[in-house]
Length: 318
Image (cartoon, rainbow, N blue to C red; front, side, top):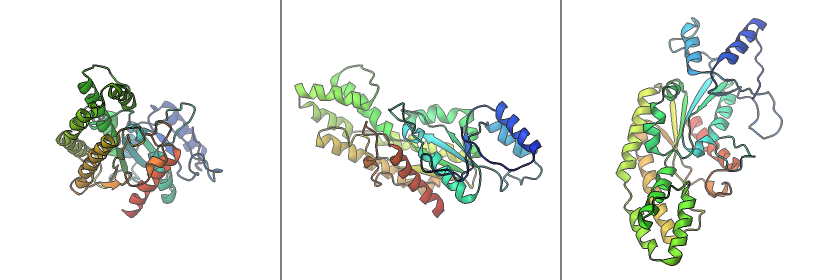
């Protein structure tokens, strides 16, 4: 848990401690004035306080000194995060902690604005656009978080492709295996291709007929929901998709097909930025694949910092 210095009277400090102890554990908070995680000595200690949407909203309504929207110069910067394992900060090595890009960005932006910050990270490992709409965006806690947010980060789409790869392998091989990952599915495919190399033709044909319309509809539904919940002044930044299978040992023709699919998905993501009022961080062209974990897919800490650089650059340009 991060700590912070907050110079106030003893009575107010005691009240803050009581509120923190009674609140539900949801958010990561900080001063925004410390250094980035794992880099050098702290110039001012950051803190981690657990609170809930109801607590903060209730305080805004009851404070007569706040403006109409409850915001003051002392109101913490609130960042909501939606998406998959990239946004969550997944690390295959459980002994290593990865600080996700949203927390890095929140700390940096809050530091520049001399504000406290809170991060509500609602990302989930393995999440695709379908489940984001059907499950995550239906949760009241998530909807309240989006409504509170000053900044909303969204990273989703890679699992749409990876899940399609798994489904395609099952269909082509006529099996009902529930693959835990795309890597597992591709290993099964590789073994099958060793016996029948022509299977690659069927795989490429199946992937080439991928249903972009379905992804488009899910994307539009997601952004319609987010826009219906967010504050008018909130800034929404989404990341586009990099090739999640490029570092896997695939036949060049299959990897080329994956590149085509990702390119078309990114056209959808970037093409609707104006209509739905969001900015796009170009992770695809960032060199992110030089900063991934041993699985060849998920960003390592340097990769997360690279994404944080991209989204901070967009925020600062607004």
